[in-house]
Amino acid sequence: MADLLGVAVLGAGHMGADHIRRLDRVVSGARVAAVADPDADRAAEAAAGLDGVTVHKDPVAALDAPGVEAVLIASPGPDHEEALLAAFRRGLPVLCEKPMVPDSTGALRVLEAEARLGRRLAQIGFMRRYDTEYLRLKALLDGGGLGRPLMLHCTHRNVSSPARFTSAMLVDSSVSHEIDAARWLLGQELTAVTVLRPTPSGGAPGGLLDPQFVLFETDGGALVDVEVFVNCGFGYQVRCEAVCERGSARIGDEHTMVVTTAGSAREEVAQDYLVRFADAYDREVQTWVDATRRGEVTGPSVWDGYAASVVAEAGVRALETGARTAVEPAPRPDLYAGAGR
Image (cartoon, rainbow, N blue to C red; front, top):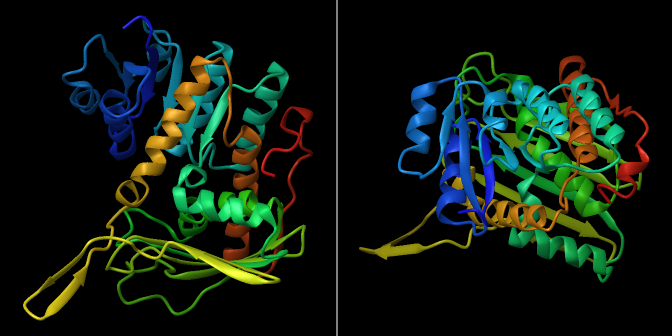
């Protein structure tokens, strides 16, 4: 196993356990060297059957475990800053799930810490950049055949929201993916956000403002709207339509199995993101492993993670005030010139 990249996985919940499975069974060139989770039983269960793996409650101890050469952070968002900074101090390459850091102040500290190193160590887990449909749409827009993009219409629906999900989390957790996807697809920064709130769905838990309609403005004059509906009840759906000067293109229409029987037809609808974006996660982690073994860092940067936090924070203020809210990021360090474009 000496030629395999030894990865410490921080977090053994829904996302972390799936990444442990992915590193062990799907991705080539890597192995799980350590697993950390405050719930020791959960960490041990996720690591069961893997050879040469150490299990920890303390994430920092996992970083210092034998054989660890890189880190995959899949713990809850509030834990990311400490883990990222600890990895930076050790010079360890990192793949960090989104949000990089939930609040922009903490995200700025991570940005400044990596900038002081003078080199990139972290890739942020905006996996839609690795989805086949999103990649095709990006290539189409970059090719210019449809002319200048004028608008993006986005849909983000979940079957149900987790316990303790708040109205703000529709923006800073769910819509954070659309924030990054819009920046990447358009090659533009988001400069202002407005959040409109229809009467909540009867399927939403009491007090949750669900659905919401989020409108972003960009520095290139485009508009991006997002319908976010996290208790739709019927499936996980992510769609995006780019409307350009000379045409439009839409992704996200389900191309799944259709079952026909007894005079009726039924089309399967994905029930969560690990199903809908399974290939994207596989491609994302494989790309990260390959780049890390070459001594490179590619993909969404810490600047992209910081930008998403700043935009999401402005979105939460817009939700709370009902007013159009400007996005005001810190200056971009030279290390990230061109990031997000």
